[in-house]
Image (cartoon, rainbow, N blue to C red; front, top):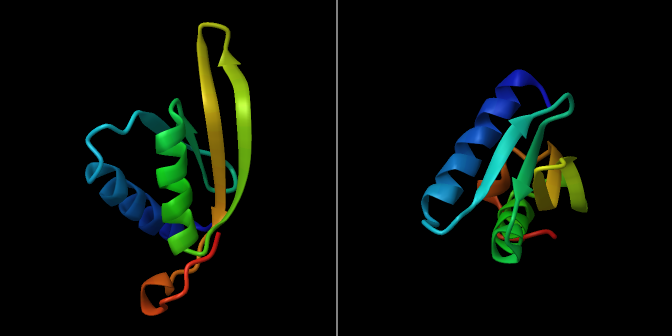
Length: 93
C-alpha cells in the first residue's frame, strides 16, 4: 500500500471504530500496510466486516504474544483494499 492509500485506509478505519464505543484495539503501521490488534472476538468480527466491505487483502493471526506482559488475541495485517469499494454493492470476505 502506498502512503496515500494508507491515509485513506486509516480514515475509514477511524470512522468505523468511532461508531463503536465498545471497541478495544490498536493499529500500527507496518511495511506492507497496517496491523490491527484486537482483544475481543466482537471487535475482530467488526473489523473483518469492514475489510469485507472494502474488498481488502489481509492476513489474520491469532494468539500472538507481542510482549510477555501484553497478549493480543487477534491480529489482522491489511495489505491492500479496493479504493472504489463505495461504488459497488457486493461485499467480499
